[in-house]
Image (cartoon, rainbow, N blue to C red; front, side, top):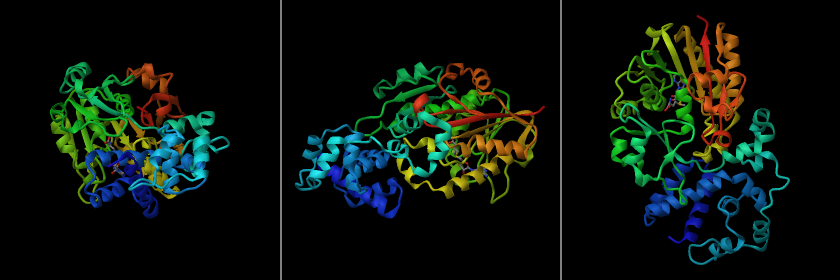
Length: 432
Ligand SMILES: C[S@@+](CC[C@H](N)C(=O)[O-])C[C@H]1O[C@@H](n2cnc3c(N)ncnc32)[C@H](O)[C@@H]1O
């Protein structure tokens, strides 16, 4: 396919996403099935155009003066890809499979690409109804924070110290990936986003299959480290899902002590078994819930550490899932809040006197973070948050002190401040 034909395809897919309010992955898959002549490079390039358009949907609409899939893609080519008007006009030739030629108005608007006077939710490309919540948190940094969340994310890997002695060893075994060491996590390797949005096939690398590396954002690595899990401890990972954090904690504990990994959704938990085996983890018991029964009642009051990697809106991962931001509704935030209450209340019963709850979300909304913990502490006496500086020091992450945003009960990582996905983490210690 020509570059122009790929742009026509991206406009078509974006129109489908808008019309049927469906996830981008589904719309792209359907497009691929009905256009079998398109090769994998074409499909990756079209996906990258669609995701970039979703990243800049509000600002592209503002610049172009209308909200159509064509105008969003054209505006994105200017704002996100930095193409000049003549380059865009050359792509829009109107010839076979190319988009229609630019109108005089489109030319003028692309020329100006004017975002002056745009409100924060337009300049920062996010839904207007979350602006009050974010404004309270970020103040004057709001637009810069949200613009950083609208960029492309790198691919981060965590080196598994159960299988390799050092990050260097894994790095040296994978020179063809062009990875560099992550600046903040001592275990991370980073592969920069490519021009066409295609990442390397890390999952078919022999080192991946041998368990030397896992795919995990640097922010996720850091909040796992912040848990302070130590060899010999008794730990419940209450929302283990596919086990990303479980694997990180098992490596920190050097396979000593015990992690009980559970989740109320057994389908989400299913992949954990293969991942544990590949990573050489021997100290995890997977507790799969049967029907609606609680799988960890025997552990009540006995845990040193309860990890709550809570269900959340995932606002902090919008760099990777830009369509999710336009599908987020106030009702889904409310649903997640109720789930967060439930998991926190469950965690409170599991932790022993003197033990700790480590609460994590990949959200930057205060409602799911500090506010969720404030109401938790109103419901439960005897839990105290550890100040951010102390928690970082204890986890040997003192170098993050001036980078993270300390909050009332915990701390926050963001693409703007730490170059990671957006995360919140807090440690609540139960009175001895
Ligand atoms: C953010 S995801 C976990 C991701 C996982 N820890 C990882 O690192 O790969 C949140 C998980 O919470 C689970 N969950 C939601 N409500 C729950 C509840 N009441 N009890 C236990 N798990 C719950 C969801 O099924 C989902 O797998």
